[in-house]
Image 1 (spheres, one colour):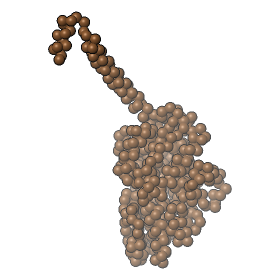
Image 2 (cartoon, one colour):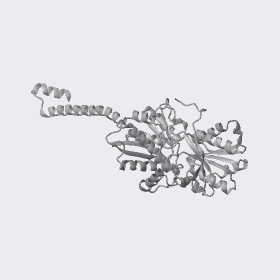
Image 3 (cartoon, helix red, strand yellow):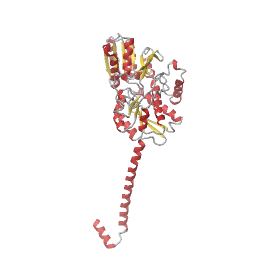
Image 4 (cartoon, helix red, strand yellow):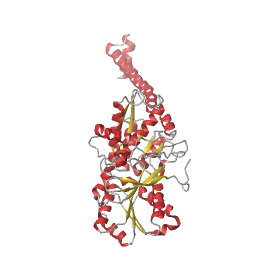
Length: 432
């Protein structure tokens, strides 16, 4: 056919109309393809540039929370953060930009967390990840976010993995570490109950191991006070056998480290077995709404924990202007929230810290400047942090909150025991 067309062209002079049309169509198609390719190539750097800084009048923030699954109690953190950003937007946003908070569910599954984080970064176009919950899920995405230079800010986990600015310069924690919390409990036990036997019930993951390790380190030469310890999986629903074994160990002190639902069962089962040890409860489960109330407030009387945030239910704060402001915030922006839920306070305070970072950024909302400002917080105090607890960071210091306070439940609210304790300790070598 090609030879026949070429023959026709030579013998008949000008090309027949249909042949000319065919060739013109081919040229137009080639031109169209070239234009499309040029547009794609031109747009690629633009998309890359937009991914590195806030686009237009919007700051898009990604977040992953366990809205379903065994750790769903912690989803209050994400809901409170969303409500906080609604409040910020109603008051004009940050530096003239509105915040778009895109919070999604991972059911505390690291694989799902990875999928969701990729989607938020690559399809949703978030500028940074903020306040995502849990150690396993955040560990799963840490390498990916650092390789792509996406801030992983104020992780909602007390693991020490978030404080390695050399190895992971785009990842920063927020709360005191679990390991330091364990040392605080050890120091308290040594001072208040130096000759008592200790039992430990801990969650069989990095979270539980870190606090248990800190407890052992803090006890040092007196670690023999621990006469029994048992681990449990986060998905477990029954705890009777473990509590029975620990009771039979003869321990006078029970250190619990796990999620709120299991904490509630442990407190209730101990009471049912007529075992009344000094009950030390990890900070992550020190929620009246999610742990103590389900356990029974009477059963929870005397429980000891740590805190770094004000308790809205504590009568000593009833005239505090910042707590009044928080209660008004809950009424207007999170009316379905429980004011006795410490995770609502946690989410509010974490979001407030991020807003301080963004305010410091001014008009430079690049990812690099966001991390630079996050590492430049000086004596910043969240409005609902306990007095004396301030936030300090630096290029070699990725641990914003380093202080805690021992508290004891009086049947209605948490009451302080002693002064603020600096939870930093020289025994742990920093990665800086």
